[in-house]
Length: 207
Length: 226
Image (cartoon, rainbow over all chains, first blue to last red):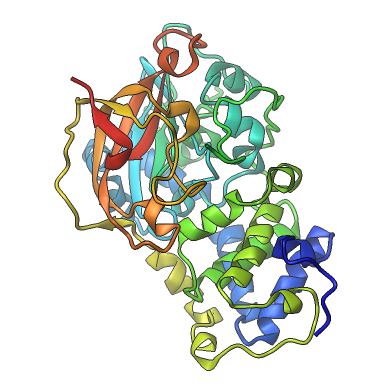
């Protein structure tokens, strides 16, 4: 059997250098071994590219803003509360909702990898997985927030939640002023992805 | 000591590459393919989430730093496939491919089962011992953030939070202990807590006095503070 590699080099170094070709090589290999159905990959991609995303979390937040009973249920057992809305699954098995207030602004990170509440927010954006965000937001959250265009008053405390276990956090942003008469669907349009991670605020209403 | 992935608090990374709130879920087609391939390979049942996280952490610091996010996933996946005997190095290198054993082929994720598998998730909570700590208790984290079973092994105590006093603010019941699970030592479930730390205790000079950081930590990472 030919051996043109050393056993001390890691297996991944045997793959092609181009990243897209590396993925293709692994996919082809597993398919030829009878372990992979390419149409299953299409189904997974379809799920996270189009079906599951921050629009789910936005519905949860909007409902929490207008329904005090739901808000209470969400704060006491978020997994059960969002499951009732149909939002459960991989990377959302143990949810905790955290409320932003006048006194405290909350931000979520995963410094060790990229843990993120998939059923509510979808696949994390590139910046959430970046070294810069993971390294810096725990030590200098206010400087990081400023890079997102968010400036907090000095009297507001910042609490950064480092997702180091299988618990996943959903930030409930503060409800913008002047939204009293809005419907749940209109409110959901104000809830951005970043506002549910804590690197943004809900959109202000322009009159 | 820690590995390259344990970067919380590190200096020198520059600005966060802030995108737009409306960026697509996958910047490139192969990113989507890499994520889907990782999930489909995981469905074969040859490893758990802790083993797969550890595989990425075991990339050399040089590879970890130069690889983009999904390249890390592909690197970890290739290494795991070989370690767990699913593929051989020769097959990875493009040599003749042998079919997998029938028992493994039967675990292949079929397209019609994808929705069910993703919706079912994989909860980490388990029955286990009663919690030693209550909400409001002061605790101190393990002085060196390390795995007690395996030298250089997987742990979820970040180095920046090692040897620091904090307060328990949430109690989550018992969860699978990653330090054991990542090394196929069983689940060894333990009480899991959210512990809040004062930024000044973590960083010496906090960005603003009174700011806080929380971590989710297993009971064996913690000792009581009198």
